[in-house]
Length: 349
Length: 130
Image 1 (cartoon, rainbow over the protein chains, first blue to last red):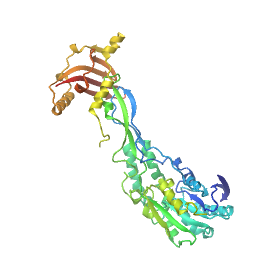
Image 2: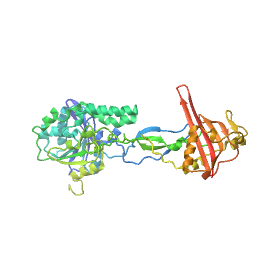
Image 3: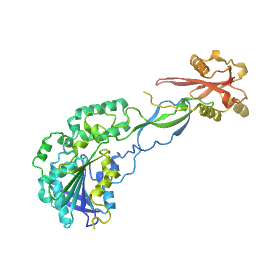
């Protein structure tokens, strides 16, 4: 990996660049709200890569105890699974990549848009023969559209724009944040201070309560202004992806098996063994939240965005049954994007 | 709201009981000493029958009889644990009845405050007479 230093509004900044096949476009990876470059290079840092389709671990023997084993031993979430980042999958397919952490990731888009303009200026200078693809997750999609509209002179070498779960026509979560916060707090109230439950809900609450999220409430001034006079650029192919899975993790518990309460003629008399169950009714999250908005309704949203609102103007849209976080590593989505990029043998030769 | 889906195999539980069984009479006889705080009593001097069972266990035995009639039940052993330690053991050198004839009954009571906790478990071993 190499770095390119640049300056933005007087501050030193840095791009991480991995070289690729020079006959292929270079992919600029743009993260979303409250994110940073690791969203695209190592999304496991969030700790959200739960394997909610994995089988339960085998039961465990705890041992002999003086008292019957009854009820719950502990709460847990699903195990984490290995995933491949967008940077890695693109590099593995010989696409060069550029990634950086945007300024004001939780704030308004104005500065990140100007920063992207600086980034594209720097890249076009460093790679005079390259074409570019902008691959953006979540709010990164709006960042791209605003950049394309405000800086058309910097877009001539962009060949494709691909947005992943970007709220192109807004998010009703932002409109309903008070009700959603209330529903989440109700869920928290049931489980007291169980940190595992808090972790599962953190992704929603940390997003919907930021200024960035409020910027794209449905009908916001920002979105209205963006759509006003926006035109498709002839040299760019537009693609968007949306998600319809609101499952984040299962809520599990280690519970004593029934035999743990049956005394044996032994000293001490109770042999404890625990097994894993999924907590009924409230698992999985966030399926168990009330369907207050399409964003958090299974089949319609991905927790933070509604599929119907992630359709990019002027483009081809695809829907996958994955969540907002899964868009950072889902192999099926990655394969689809690679096919859009023409990552088949000989395509670019 | 049921949290658990119990899937108990009664034969496996009986087998587990037999596999973890320790004859305390033989154990302490071999060591020459009953540990302090434990009373070891011979079954021949301790009245054990259905009449002395706590009401809950009587009801459970009645329920069992309705489903699996049996001629009689002969009580063989009794043990009382307090906080996991045996305090009263009614046992002799005889082992357990065979697998298809064994019957166990137990109840556990607990009390707990910030100053005090006690777990009492009573366990009977009997033989089904058919």
